[in-house]
Length: 196
Image (cartoon, rainbow, N blue to C red; front, top):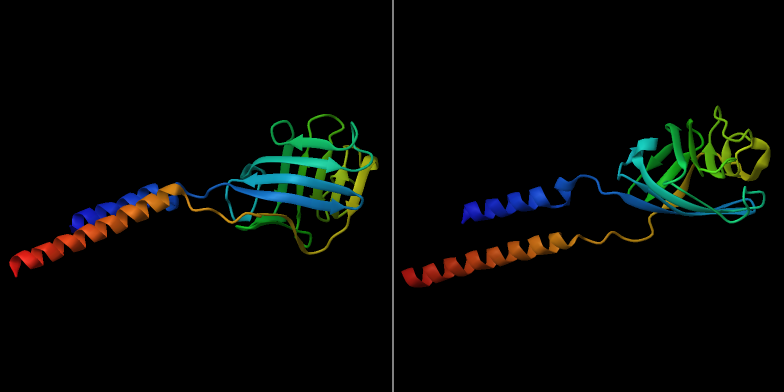
């Protein structure tokens, strides 16, 4: 019986979420920048802490603002755009993407059609727009930035809105484990009755 129980524990550990590693996380973006907005999502590989460009696995944003290339709204995406994260200002938790303007870094998501509509967050020492540290929305040329907002310190730029739902295999493993424990208990009781 102990072998069966140990085998069950081993099965749970090798097939459950702990063995699978970090799961991707989708963060909802809903930002107002001056008279413009950025809505959509950014997906990461599940890394917590400081992020790099390689940690961003997908994104799609709808930009609305005056002065966007091709008009407003403009949709830009991971599939056809580019992602740039530099230094240590962008980080992730289980529930939030944070950009720290008191740190150093750049977080730039831009489209594929020149002059490249973009959403950019930058600290001092970086120059995606020429407007200095802050959050910017617009198109490629610095003179054509549609909207800007200056910030200091860390701000939440995206968050998870839906509580994670347990995977179906977790329920299956729990049911199997409870069933096994009940079977072991009945077997012990029937042996005790037979021996008595």
